[in-house]
Length: 109
Length: 112
Image 1 (cartoon, rainbow over the protein chains, first blue to last red):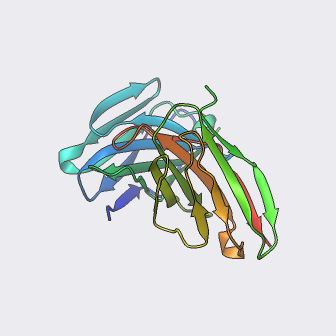
Image 2: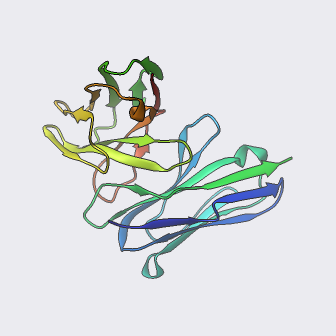
């Protein structure tokens, strides 16, 4: 099956800092999503981005499908950004999402 | 729109007991799925359905049963609970292949 690698596994930053999270994958995809799992365990949809670039406030994401990676950018971090960020994707013709193991982000006030 | 709803939020079972985790969506989505999340890990697919009457196995199907009699509902049955099934269970839905998936709030299950 498709392989998904996320880096870094852990990231600790001061409030106000910027960060870049990376997701590498092993096959062509027609679905790629970024999720934030907050400390209460809720999975929050951030981006649906099988290709291209999107922005939503302080967050943006870019997927370069031909090179099989996606990046999530968080600017001016806030403590509420803490949690685990997951990349999940599905290859063409397949609905089944495969999740990466996540990046745990901790923002220190 | 309630989105994807799951009940119960929490459940404690004894080894050998059976139960059903409920999942419902009101977005007229064809595709529904169940995942489990173990501590420190990403989500793993248990079972999925591409429409009413059609189900298939995911990555970790053993010990679980599903059926899909309506578009809205996709219950997950634990036939004989085991401590290894202690986990958080998430239900998800989407319009189908290549479309954004939406997740429910999860059910935290403990098997003693």
